[in-house]
Image (cartoon, rainbow, N blue to C red; front, side, top):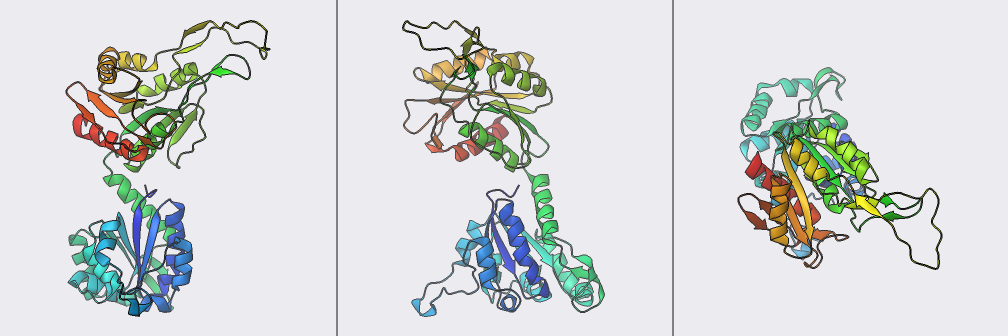
Length: 398
């Protein structure tokens, strides 16, 4: 859920600030891009060098960038717009009070007031401060405002007392945020089945019939669906790509193997997106040993492979079924025909006539073809196309 997320981490003056280094590591390992903002008080507990090294970004702690005489400021408005989410951890009693009452006397607070994203806060203070009515009122104000409270834990505190006020552990903060994002994600609870990549149909032990698909489009869709909260099963032909934790990856080689892996999983799917470039034909008989080069010609008899999309179309009940069509001519007409023949809800059509689209590129240009309309995209990264596709499915079919 945190892969690719841009996170502002605000660190305030608390002994628990030492944990912020571990929190940065947790977030970075989860795939997030982390920008740390320190208060002056936080600098006495943890150094910018430590946090900057771990986040791989310069730590921000002042309204004006160094050198001060250059007159270049750290734009808190841009920071607030940049972030996908903001975390204040540790959140001291002082900073909680200022957040609750709109004070803006440091970069962290002005950034908080500018943030357009969800804001999480993890209090850290001694038990009497934590329990004080004024502090509890401030926490309530922030919660009513929509900020998300990550409750502190109980245990031994810096004062030597034992009670509530310990900042949640870094892994607990990460898990809390991931669970919260998962519960609010647009595809939470949906099961998405995706096919990707080419298939390879053996001619002999070293040669095969295949195509130039890299699998990049299907893998991008799988990552996007996972980020939106779906439970994703990705059935992939041979590629050099990898997927994030949480995506169920099933590797296959041939069209028959992809068919056998896809068909039984379709019943439990809510959405099936078949982006794989499945070979239409395979050698009728594969040689047991490598075929040696002869002086004459070589003939290989081909037979059709299973039509996976057509089979799912026949089995479809309440599932949303999406197919792909790579065309070289009459693209829209062919895509509309495929939509009807295969009983699909949507066809994603692209053509080799578009520059930097199709096999091998990191970009693509597609047309979404449904029964009611067709929508053209601009040339975009395959990651952006993946999100556009899922947005289209959510808008028109969910």
